[in-house]
Image 1 (cartoon, helix red, strand yellow):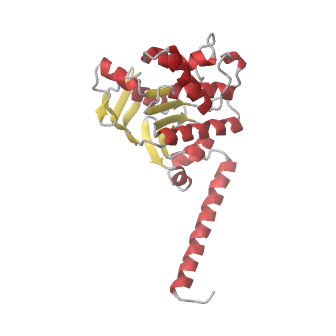
Image 2: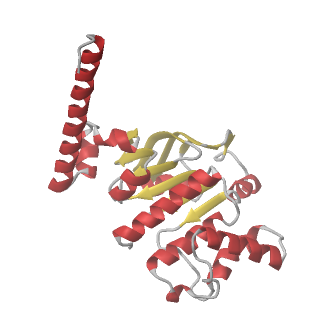
Image 3: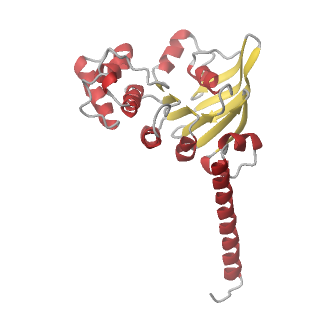
Length: 274
């Protein structure tokens, strides 16, 4: 679990994060959404320690990350996996060397032990046999899966994904979303995802935070987002007429179901014959 308490961050007098608090649960996909410039990227960078908040706290499982010294922060970073927006693979290295990189940096495992772990995670992301390929030989979806394999190779407790579906077609995006969700639940990881992809929101949004102009404007689940009356959120999520119509239809269906349930309750309570 990651707890964020009242963090603020400014650059050259420009407020980027304004008193943001959140609770990011373990075993769930915690999505941070918002328009460009809303503060979500700075929020994630504060969480992983790339930026130091001007005030407030980031707490990892009861331990204040913002108050830790360099050595203590390094220990926490060993438990963090990161999937970057562009995958950030080393073009000159093979798939297995890319995935092995964190093991070489943070462990003293033998080559055999490292290869065993590399093959385990490549199998988990359905890339068996891709060890000797180079990034240039991979599709966009395969690169993302290599990035995920590298992110989980150290068995992290926390997984951060920055726009994991950037540049992918809708079908491949769905595959990546489900893989992130499966890994989160399977390994009981605290997963934080920055995304613009509304398919991701509705597919894996266990907990959603909507950022607007540096503030946390709304939070809830993928089910609650359908019925939200927050105008700023609705303008962002349901921007097109098609999506607005889809939201209206879903709400009408829900209203109809409630009316049907009420009628059934009345029939049962009155002992009326069906």
